[in-house]
Amino acid sequence: MINDILKKIPSINEIFEDNKIKELVNQKGKIIIKDIIIKVTDNYRNKIISTSYHRKDDFKKEEIYNLIIDEVIKYANLSEKKRLGRVINGTGIILHTNMGRAPLPKRAVDKINDVASSYCNLEYDLTTGERGSRYDSVEELLIKLTGAESALIVNNNAAAVFLCINTLALDKEVIVARSEQVEIGGSFRIPEIVERSGAKMVEVGTTNKTYTRDYENAITEDTRILLKVHKSNYKIEGFTHEVSGEELVTLSNQKEIISVEDLGSGVLLDLENFNLPYEPTVMDQVKKGLDIITFSGDKLLGGPQAGIIVGKKEFIEKIKINPLTRMVRIDKMSLIALQEVLSIYIENKNVNQNIPIIDMLTKTSKTLLEEANILKKMMEEKLGNKIDIDIIEEDDAPGGGSLPGVALQGFSLAISSNIISPNELQNKLRENMIPIICKIKNDKIILSMRTIDKKDYEIIVDAFLRLL
Ligand SMILES: *Cc1c(COP(=O)(O)O)cnc(C)c1O
Image (tube, rainbow, N blue to C red; front, side):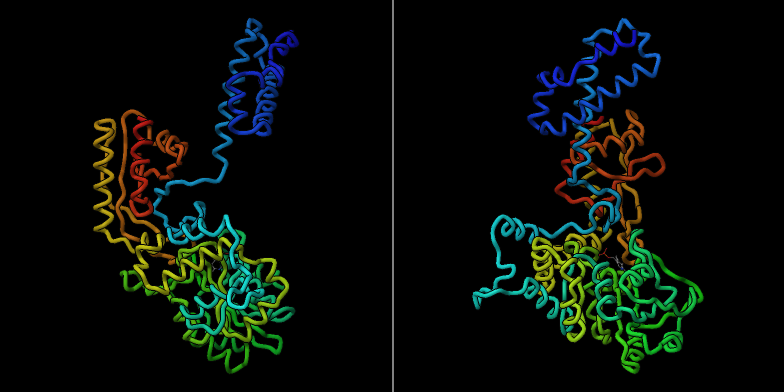
């Protein structure tokens, strides 16, 4: 009896002959659709064998056929969701690690657009007509901007830290304060990075207090690096003491040991100008005399994923010729983006407007409230009484392991509807053509104005219009 029902499941070839499926194959390719058909038909086969399903022997062949076709279409559309694509970030977390950290400035995107489909002078020196270095142009910008003697760009900051230690302290010792043994995003942990770089980590100090003498007492003839790590994603408060950059430099000069600081975010602007707490800039740290400073390209700098190393020429030259440097080389598109982002800083052209990350970070409450009113009005005009919107004060966050403990005063829309529950609304917004990501608080959908671009307001209104 089961076999009779199993026979009602259409064959793969039969399904491929269906007009709707033919169209899907056209859109998405046979490879994708075949996999889905196999999965869906297997599912039905198992269901029929293992459950009471087969007792419904009045099941019509046509019925099963239609169910299967519908399911194939559903899964084909779902598979699209797994592709990388753009989303609208309504969370108010600026450097959202799960949403790609820093959106690029328009100027960087335009330049990539212009260059990427063509050849470029990546490693070709246009003045001599000979082979050049891919790093020259961006290195020069970094040197001018930060005041460092030399610079090197690699794939990301994790690679930058790794290379510094591997080049300068292989089989030797690196001293790190216990309070600075950070973990960033799960896979980057200072003790593991130091070990995998081929050096031995020597811990000094206690969880809350570290003094210069702790470093001094730990120095042996094998010590090569005094490593300082930015406490990017946490804060130690209360009875604390840490060794300042200046103190570390003094000791490193006395003992002729290299001072390295993993600065994490790499800020190039004085954030106090925007009423934010002081955050050491790369320039400040260069001035203090640290031998090497590393930071990310896609955190508060607001550029592409990259690891930037600046510092004393004699050390950077050594890192450049480490064979591992090639393995963490930055690609041309990121390099071009970084060149454009650094140019915005150098030319000092409305940095806080032209670099999206800085724009979001420095937006005033007044602007955010105005924007909240604009979006609220747009939504109310289109959606009328299907929706209830309040403007609420809600703190936003820098995110992405930067400015720990800093809350940014902001404004959000708190949205509810009597047609659909907040959870359902949140799920549906996430399934939107351009997914809209938001949180729920007090049974309302919360859309933070800080991380939503004006150009996306229409998309948001349309999404709600379709859902309600
Ligand atoms: C973010 C961060 C890293 C890792 O940087 P990536 O660019 O993500 O590789 C390393 N160290 C610190 C202190 C950080 O904040």
